Length: 408
Image (cartoon, rainbow, N blue to C red):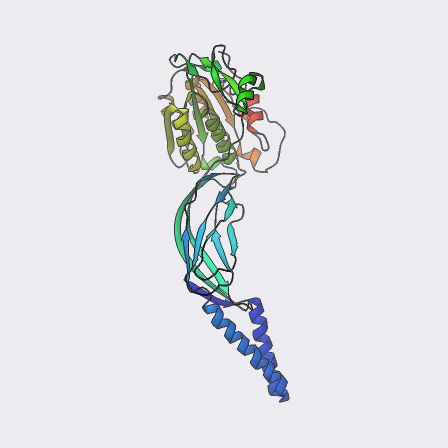
C-alpha cells in the first residue's frame, strides 16, 4: 500500500505560489510571476523526488525474543539499499500494542549505496499477552520536506510478553511438606534445614548469615551453604479472571495485580526443589498439572501471559485442580471476589489437609486506582475461611505477611 501527501510546509509553499501568481495577474508584474513559477517548479521537483524516495529499499524482520512486563524488548529490522546511490534518511513506524507508547518511531540515518544495515529498535513492554506484529510503515520524502511518501510492508511476527514479577520473601513452604521422602535432595534455598548438603552460588533471597566465606574468597563470587530436606514441597496457584469483577482493562487493574502476584510465586518456586501446579479461570479453565517447578513454572507463566477475562468459575477450577494435588499442598488462591461456591471449594481443600492462603482483590478497592485504608476481611459464607485483602499500592511481600499461616 502506497500513500502520497503534501506536508504542512508543502501546503504553505503551494498557497504562496497561488498568491504570487494572483498578484502577478492582478498587477501585471514580472517579479510576482517569477516567484510563483519558481514555487510551482519547486513543488513539481519535490513531488517527483518524494515519489521515488522509497524505491529500492527492502525491509526484513529479524528474530525477536519474548519479554516480561517492565523489561525492554528488542525489535530488530534489517534495511537494505538496493540502489547504487546514497539515500536520504527514512522513518520506520510500527504499532506495538504491548509498549508504553503504542507507536514506535525510528529514524534511519542516510544509507550508502548497496548498504545493508541492522536497525536496533527497543520498546518498554508494559502489557502482558500474546501479540501479532504485522505492518511496518516506511516513511520518506523530499529534501525540502514538502511531500511525504509512505509504503506499508507486511512483516508478520508473534510477540509474547510475560507478566512482571517482583521479589518475594520465604514463603514458609517447609511448614507444609508432604510428599514422599527424598533423601539427600537439595533445598535450593540456604538455611532451611540442619543437614549440610554443599556450597552453591548466592541467589537473591538467601540469608546473608549462610554465606560460605572461604568459598567466596576462593571463587570471587558470593557462595552460600546449601542444606538437605527430607520432603518435596507441593505448591498450587489459583487465579480468578472473572470478567464481571475486573476493575478495568489497564495494567493497574485488580486482575493484573493478581496475575503479577501469581507469576512472582511461580518464578520464586522455580528456584526451589518443589512441585508447582496452576489453575486459572478466565475465558476457559486453564490447568497446569503438578510437576517439578523447574519445568512447570515456565508453563504456568505462559498460561498467565495468555490469560484473558471470561465467565469461567474459579470454584470449578479449584475442584479440578484439587483432584490432582497431594495432601498438605500449599495453595495460593487469588480471587476478585468471595462468592459462596469459591468459599466452599477452598474449604474442601482445607479439609484435605491443604494449606490454603486466600487473597482477594475486590473491584471496588481498585476502581479509584489509589492507596486506600486497610479493609476488613471479606465475610465468607459458611465455614470460617476468609481471604486477606489486596489493596492498590500493596506489594506482594506486604500482602504475604498479612496472611496468617496455619501451623503444622
